[in-house]
Structure formats: structure tokens, C-alpha cells
Picture 1 (cartoon, one colour):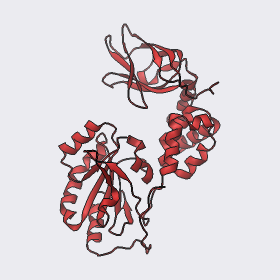
Picture 2 (picture 1 turned 45 degrees about the horizontal axis):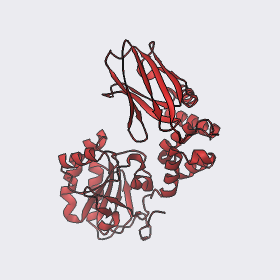
Picture 3 (picture 1 turned 120 degrees about the horizontal axis):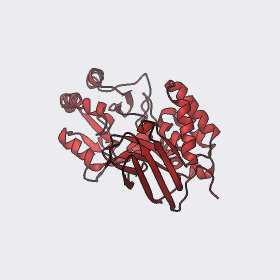
Picture 4 (picture 1 turned 30 degrees about the vertical axis):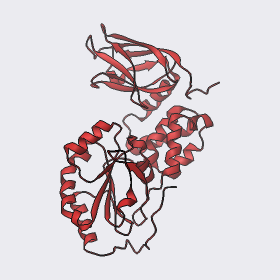
Length: 340
């Protein structure tokens, strides 16, 4: 028998009946699997009502209920059996969804954390995880915050999960983070990895060792990332002759979006991606919790700065290129590390 809140491997009959005041007749609603962005089903709003009926690939399933143009959306935990969306007297995002014990648990946490400061919110979420170690909601929350909370705290919470929860989709993501995360600090040797470029050729970070490297993390759907590209291109043009290289890891999940951005903005440095988004191998290794992010690596293979942009990046590059060898806070030169 499955524990409440844990996923099933069998299909299950499912329905979601809803009422809404926000959507005009003829509006197309979709339910999408948040794990792989697949559309599970479609429904059309008629006289403020809609109805989904199909088999779930697993239950519970973390999904997104959204209009086809994404002008309205909300996340929801789907479970086998009848579910109900009550939006006749509320905004779309604040509508009450019933019929799922997992969704009920998630909504109780949402109400508790709504409007509280971030630090307090994180405390409440961590306490929720400790109080509900068998719930897939806990696994999802921990998978989201793993890189922010760090390896030790994440592992401490993860160890309290049941075996079934650790083996869930989100549990496997957490386990992968714990296994791979090294999060090198300033003064540490860089950690090697390889990812495919646009042609599918695997390119190791160490293939450009001996140069000054900006290990850049970005994505085509990240507005701050895109805003800083013009200035980074100018810096790259100014310092490329001084053995400076950019190794850019995209955290995109859509190959077309990534490659269109590379072509549109003429990003002529090394561009790689495994199209795994936040679960990217390189992002997990380096503990990337948000983008844009970057690690500046000197010719000796040491991380000398993190998150530098614009003027500060120029200043550090000027310092590095004006010296033959740089020591970081008297740290001895270490060999590069392979990911554990």
C-alpha cells in the first residue's frame, strides 16, 4: 500500500471540474506535467465552467493548470479520482482546489507562509519538511531549495525521508544534488565536468585550462542574464587576446530557445548545455541557486571570484592579465578536482 503523498506507478482515472469568473467563454485551459512540461489534457471554458477527464501517468502528480497563452496559471497536486476547482468567487490563482489530500496539505503550507518575510518563510518550510517526511510535497520543496540551503542542511532533512519518498522524482533530484554538489569557494581549485555544445560534441571545462576562464551560468528566459550580455560581449572582445575565455553553461530546457539566443546575440564563446534546467550537472556541482551566476578561474585553475559583472569583472580581469601568476589569499595551488 502506498503512503499518502507518495507517487504511484499505475495510471488512475482522474477528473477536474471547475468554475471561474476570470475566463471568457471559449478560453482553452491546459493541465501540464511540471516535471517534463508535457500537456496532459485540454478543456474549454463554457459559461464559466470547465471539465478535465483523463488518466494520470502517476498519482500524486505536480502539475500546472494554465490558459493556453499562460496569462493565468497555478500549480496543483493532482490525484486519482474527482477534483474540484472553485473560482467563481475568487481570482484564478487564489481559487480553492479540493479532492486531493496532497493538494490540501500544500495549500495549508501556502496559507501559513503567505506574506511572511523570506527568512521566516524558509523556517516554516523547513519545519514542514521535518513534520512531513513522507510527503512528496516535502520532497518537492527540498528539491527547490537544495542549492540555497546547501549540501549539509539538505542532506540532514533528506535522511529523514522514507525510502519511498527518497525514491520519488523529487527525491532523486535531491539525491543527485547531494552526490554532485561541491560548491567550490574562492581559493579552491575548479571542478572539471563536460557538457555538450550546440553540435552535441562534449566539451570539458578543463579543455581551456591555462587560460583565465569565466564559467558563466545563464538561460535564454532569464531577463537579467540577457540584459548583461552586451556588456559581457564587450569585455570578452577586450580581453580575449589576453587568454581570456568564457565557458557559458545554459540552464535552458528547450534547445531551440537556447540556440536562437546564441545566434541572435552572436555569443562567440564556448556555449554548452545538457538542457536540464535547474538540474544541470554543472549547476549542481557548483551549487548554483539562481542566475545569472559566474565563477572566475585564474590561469592556475583557482576560483578567484564569484558573481562579478561589468566594472568589477573588468577590474579583476585587468588585475589577472597584468600578472604572470596570481595567488589567492596565499592559498597554495591545488590540482583541479573531478566531481565526486
